[in-house]
Amino acid sequence: VIVNTGSTSGLGHMTVANYSAAKEGVLGLTRTVARDLGRYGVRCNMIRPVSLVSDLMLPELVEVSKESRKLGFPSNGTRGFMFREGMVPTGEHVAALVLLLCLPETAEISGQDFFIMGDEVGRYPEPEMICTMFRPGGWTLEALRAPDVIDNLLGSIRNRYVRS
Image (tube, rainbow, N blue to C red; front, side, top):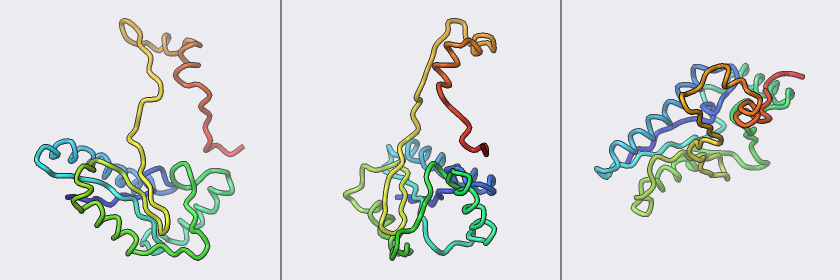
């Protein structure tokens, strides 16, 4: 049983692109190990623990997180991670999830992405393609720029990270 440690920073965290990329790479490694070694009984999962104590909680990062919320978007992922009143995330919470993933009753769980922060635990879905289109002969820039293709492929996507 392998339990890798990722981070919610891998979901896209302002100011630390290098760290975000490295942590999301851990998820790719986790899924690949699960697929490659599952037939040998090896299972591999990743957890994204959030705790109050971290070497990355530099004053600059705390300030960036505050600024990003003022601009209307979370500093990592698609949601903000706020500690609830009276809830102090600890290493014991994280350890409990790690132990669960090592127990026989989770023997079928592999290649998964988990989150834990104090009293909250969750599992992220695997990426799914949300739109697909086909064109005989392949795609050219002209074909991709057609209004129906742009409407279907891109829909109403807007850059939510631009300050209005």
